[in-house]
Image (cartoon, rainbow, N blue to C red; front, side, top):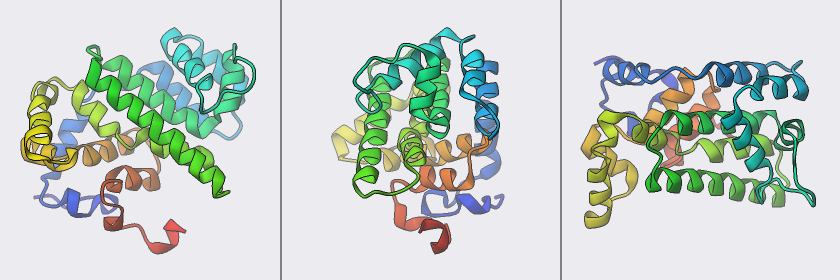
Length: 233
């Protein structure tokens, strides 16, 4: 049994064979070139909105998704956002990173059915509600809060995008329906791991911060987070 990386220790990760799980995550399709390049640019403080526009414009599906979200109730102003440049300015670079990842996973998953749509809508609603709450509390880091809300169920989207887990996900749903299970415990019984763990590992693979990985891993059980108290202030 290999030792779990420090940022992923906790009850939900207990007893897992990290070699197997990391290998499984490693088999995921690589992020498409446009999305990967855009995310790298978002991390660069010198990147301009126009430079990001030029890159994202080469992927029409991704560009359309960004525009659609910019015109959603979360971001929409009194007038319609019609250009990608405007959309990027309104959404903000940090939140844009999460949208790119989520939209990319949607493209990777060719059979985007009702369950996937429900999870995507839940992620968007969580992001929107979290941002509204943070605004009312006048908290900083609203872009980060939107990003974390959007990515909290990243692991579920990944499980449904992979053939070996997607075909058995109906067993997870049956446990939820028939035995009143929550998602994570049901996944744990069927697969041997749950979506928060997979989401955190994928986020780490795609170079999200340790803090973001922590939130994804522990959102079902936030009191189990191993982050030092000072990092949570």
